[in-house]
Image (cartoon, rainbow, N blue to C red; front, side, top):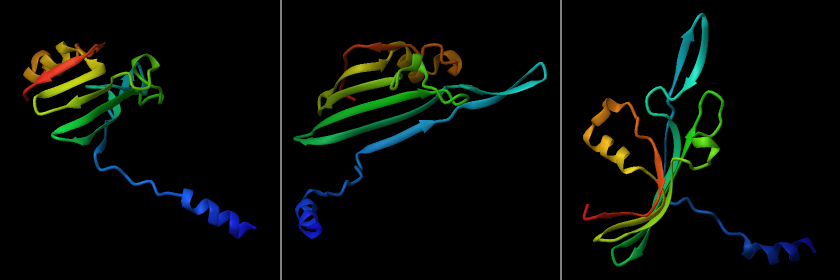
Length: 140
């Protein structure tokens, strides 16, 4: 009886293969703070801790499906940043073509990209606001 059941279930078992088109990335940004004789572990000394996943899938003809999921982490207590949202930094999907990319979802704001691209603000990160809107990038 067990052999018969095992032979019936065997074709249903498939191996899960790791995807080489998904990248896991992250930053642990923490520091020790000493105030009035008390030392504490704090989160976000410079840019904030994060864990993210980004990837793409070739659709053929020079087209790719793309995605990004990025979550903020408070290292000092292990909670999610950005008001407790799981992927509160970025969560978007899109289509990449030879002409450019179209993405929909939660993105960093245009001000953030301007500051990062041109090094404005001395790296202080005062433009870390997010927006939920379509983004179109052309001709990279």
